[in-house]
Length: 296
Image 1 (cartoon, one colour):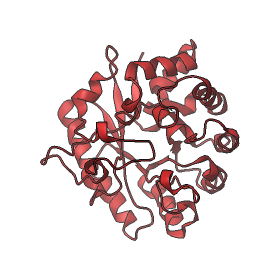
Image 2 (spheres, rainbow, N blue to C red; image 1 turned 90 degrees about the vertical axis):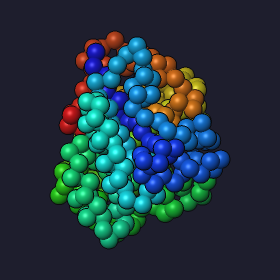
Image 3 (cartoon, rainbow, N blue to C red; image 1 turned 45 degrees about the vertical axis):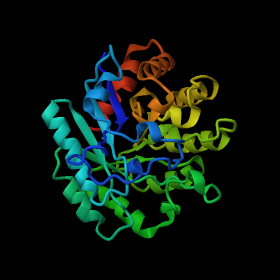
């Protein structure tokens, strides 16, 4: 069965000739919303990544931008494009653009010069009373410039990777309903950061699932459940599969971030077990949905 990883990262903060200007990867000891990243603040390149699912092999993968503070985000896209071309491993690319910036359209155009570029991610996860776990300093959904530049994604044929918190989902769904021609995928299961109370998450995901141009990634398990693939992790997975259907759900490892708590084979076994024995559903979630969404 074809396996495509719809969400991973590659980086090289320790190798000067490959360093594209990483910031958080060099800030050793600084905590992130997903915990202590020290073990992964090192080079993580394609040979190590391709070895993670052994004995399984990957038919392709999707690299998602890893650091919004890289001085020129297009340098990261160029770095991954070269890795894909040199290795022969198909890697589709989701780059970074600051959609609040005056030069957002110019940066999109420069990204598009790289043939594997498929989409953009700017994390909008923001909780006004929880700055310690917020990725964005403000709610970008309220920013007129951000909203206008998001609409411009259509002009470049780009998708959007949406990482947000459950409290933002109803507003996001209202906004996204005005842009049905921009395919969107929700990263990391919609960030169920409080597995003790999934009510806000369930309502928000239900509203987003009603939009046919919105898909979701089964990714980021370790960010929200640590090593515990039971109870809440199972409930979240099953509600996503039911609400969106296999044709709008895709597997992503989020490696190396999720390697802080999980092995790749354990993650695969869990997701495939939750999808079940239906061959068509498994083919979609484990590869087909990502292949169609990111246009391999």
